[in-house]
Length: 90
Length: 183
Image 1 (cartoon, one colour):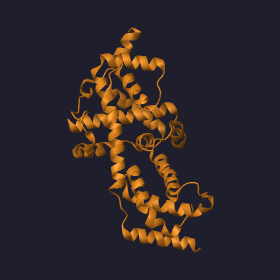
Image 2: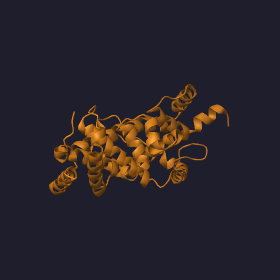
Image 3: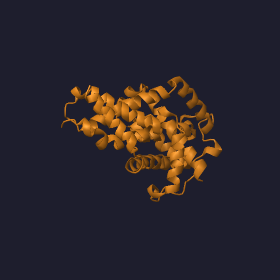
């Protein structure tokens, strides 16, 4: 397979680069290869869009569940504070 | 800044619990972690320099405890590498092309305000629960806590090349799970 054909065929590598690019800098060679691949591959263009969307959604999910859910019950809290007081009085 | 352990539970317990449960996904374990955090903090009060807030200091202690959980849960990296290799062949052909059934399809919500779609959110949650603990750890540390890659690699004891593989695996699997359950 020619070098160019390898880039065009390799969705496995392209998706890897898409995810890497989201948080770090690609080398010049990687940038060019990814651009060539994306130009011709509609699957990976969708992947790129969805990859970013998933990041945003996961972030939002964490933020909202930090605000909403998860309250400790009062019994547990009382016992916990008692335990701390006991430790302090040791 | 000074510490006031008499008020710790009232002031910080719910926050720490929420922090823990979104990361370990287990109520009992999250409770244990909160308790361990306070008890460990009591031992370390002398180390508190007052540079950060009490909450930030306690959260840092909790975070280290969560990392220990991740380390214990991940049954060795070798295992993960093998699994990753297997799953890789599930998604891609030998020449690197998408396997036909796994080729990404539009979800139909990419261009909308996807943050308010409750139904999609609950699918996303379920899909996240299926991820191996170490992947989830890497993913949350990178995308939620926005920690530098070097720090994450050092804390979780993964190499930087493994780090990228894990991030990518997590994403491929999450996306595939969403496609399967949404479309």
